[in-house]
Image (cartoon, rainbow, N blue to C red):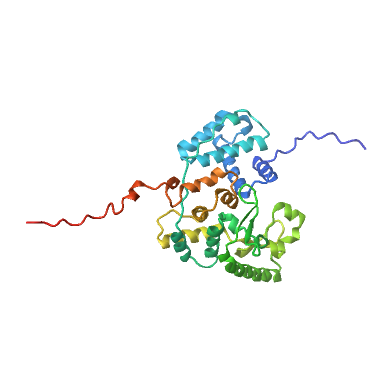
Length: 344
């Protein structure tokens, strides 16, 4: 039988977006970073007339970044995110290590002081909330958690005996130990029991699955129905995972808590632009006011550099750098003087 002639057809080139998504997942970038980078890559592609980005150089990248500032008036952090996406595109996806990439200067981010609520303001906001959003907000403030860290808590990460919370895959893909406030132990236990009853009902109808981290899903896929891996704050609805057909329950979506906090701040009459992250800022500031040392606070917040934590020293209730104003040494300075008696 004669041998088949060698194929002369060239292999199909995979779409750039597909290759970029695969490269990001291989490097364990978060889903949010993945979507943000893909968005910037698409905008860059459109900006250059959908031509092959491998043909471009520093001139096109600089023009794109400049256009973001001049025409769209983006912030420095947004411009830097766009640059990071293009760096990833060229180095990790296209395999092009061009020297001009290192010479691009990142936009300087202006220093901003965080918004901090007073203890009375925290109390006023929490009083305007109820149910699960109130408990989650109290946990943001009491443990210094970020929004998604709170939403993505699993049952196995709560340690009531040691009064601690293990935060898994936090910002920078780092684990850390956070406080489990004594005052929240009872309501958290009640929340866990409520989640357990819901999980058992899900199991009874053939559901009860949750999403697992990629590595663990491959190693122990059946853990997706086990109790320790369930969400502490589950969503009210289930969904069917398209690839596996599993009926899963997601954690409570972060927008639910964001909306509840925004409405509570408005109803409480707090004259500050407070968000869910404001509770974390308030946690850090109030601990410093109570005498917690900066290194301990750095560990609790999960900061890599203590300079990030130092920003809270500028928003203490003692004033900048703890200095007392000289006007405070002049009591009753602006009080109305006593009336002068008129003598005829």
